[in-house]
Length: 149
Image 1 (cartoon, rainbow, N blue to C red):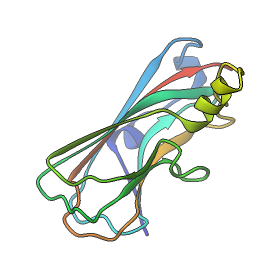
Image 2 (cartoon, helix red, strand yellow; image 1 turned 90 degrees about the vertical axis):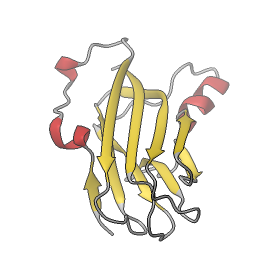
Image 3 (cartoon, rainbow, N blue to C red; image 1 turned 120 degrees about the vertical axis):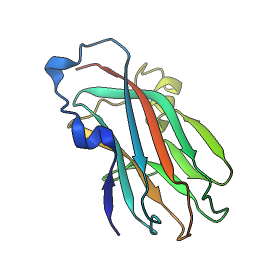
Image 4 (cartoon, helix red, strand yellow; image 1 turned 30 degrees about the vertical axis):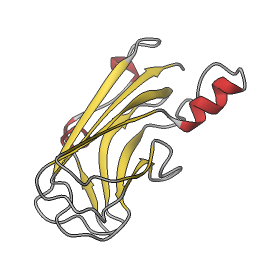
């Protein structure tokens, strides 16, 4: 198992002083595979800062080297590994999978109004679930979030 990093995770410094509270912000990460991604490999896609809640986003996979047996989860590696996307199939030329954070849905349903803010910054990650060769060659995640604390 390896941890791979997108351009966003490698190049962005995230801090509360650069992220205004109450404004919807976007984080975009792109990872281009240079070799097959193995089972349980983690691709760290975007960094979400302390005090943020994720409102939703998209997983996009493109390329000509897809394998119908590959499945992807999107979530927090140290927590709920599939809270955003559970078992996406990247087969085909383009897969665009929208997501909404599961805790936020539960909170709204319970009339709490918002999801649970992050106690510490974390990355939204893609996890390869099934070993397959020739999986999606390009992975992209766009996450929309807001700072609440």
